[in-house]
Image (cartoon, rainbow, N blue to C red; front, side, top):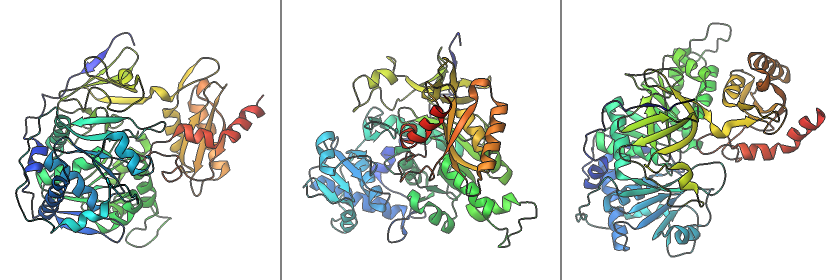
Amino acid sequence: MSAELSVQTRGSGIDAPSVLNRIAAGGASSAHQVTVYQSGGPVRLSLAELDRRAADVARYFLRRGIGPGDRVGIMARNRLEWLLADLACVKIKAVSAGFEPGKFGAPADLADRYRLKLVLTDRPDPDPRVLPIAELSALADAEPDTPLPPVTYRPDDVVTIKFTSGSTGEPKGLGATAGSIDDSINAVQSEFDHGPDDSLFVFLPLSLLQQRYWIYSALAFGHDIVVAGYELAFHALKREQPTVIMGVPGFFESLRREIGRRPVDGVDEPDTPVDLPRRARQVLGARIRYLWTGSAPAGPSLLEFYGACGVPIYEGYGLNETCITTKNTPAAHRVGSVGRPLPGKRVRIDTDGVVVVSSEHPVNTRYLYSEPGASDAVFLPDGSVRTGDLGHLDADGFLYILGRADDVVVLRNGRNVLVRPIEERLRDSVAIDDCVVLGFGQDYLVAVICPATTGTSEAIEAHIRETNRRGGADERIGGHVRADEPFGIDNGLLTSQYKPRRREITARYHDAIHRIYEGAR
């Protein structure tokens, strides 16, 4: 690519009241509710009650000497008290820090490293700075309704510290500004118009800031919200009637398999044409309005499947460092793209083919916590973010992501091979649930494949032959390893956003991969 390409935002940034200031001031709707699926069963509260209880927790924080700018860590699975703690921080302008369980050390160590005045956790720890998060529920009536001190957020104020969900190394910490949060939520609201008849369903860890956006959205715009953990997501979905499901492609692949297995009206008719729309509504519920996906690439077959189901699925794009950047929307949708830039965003493609994002209100311009040099590798001098993703823009400003620059495998002959399209072609087979393609420094590629329940060796090998036929010489898969269990979050082979941990997968199947290459020599 000899020159940079860019696309401006659609219009200017959103001129709307601050969502965070509205939450800090209180006054949430009593006509809408939050439902949280957690251990012990679901908990339901009106948004007004959620707001009132968060204010009680905020007063408790003040009594403990926590005020504006002080840091409160939260390390626990999704639960009601997670919401109360986070919203309490918003109300007193304390800075929350969300830690994904299992990725960080002891709570007391977090307090030292990240200068936390309090750590709320579901892990036992005797340190006086650590409080069992469940105890927040007992604070509901612990304080009379005295007014909280008024707070006002400015665009550059840091609201929360969020950490990368990357597959290797210690997560990088980034201070997210109020302007970036307000812009993202208001931009989404301007495009999707979530309202009184909506119920948004989220299940990824609340330590991921974007999951909390939808809590803030409910409080600001008046709609229902359902929260679960990924382990309870299917259970909750069967019992609720959401209008919107916020998920990652891996989750929607699982739902796709469930829809394929679901009998129509209770009758299994395998020899008749599949009534996909009816099957889909039986799984997703009769009120479903659309599906929202991002965080990882959605393959063409997944998008086509939900199109055949009659359920819109809107793919978007963003990073921790950029917030939501582009989105397909009801008014502007192009299948295969990740949409056009949201208001307040500018996207350009640099001379190396890498996507660069500029924001009217950046998330931040460098990391708070990272290895030396990490900020300079990502944040450009003007505050733009060099994403590391390869992409291109079409004539109408839709962005297409080709893969990570890191997903380029360099073969022994020096040829660069982008493996994402190959992986997507492999996943098109009903015999293959998931896969990664590897081969750095080798003569050819090797795939690690998670077979479907009915995926026979013959079917997998036939599909690999077909994939090789459709690809170029350097895209040939010369052998494959059959995974002994699916890639998952619990076994450490997927991130919390269902992205493959390539290094961990390579290490786990190193011996089998090595035998393939040794056998060819």
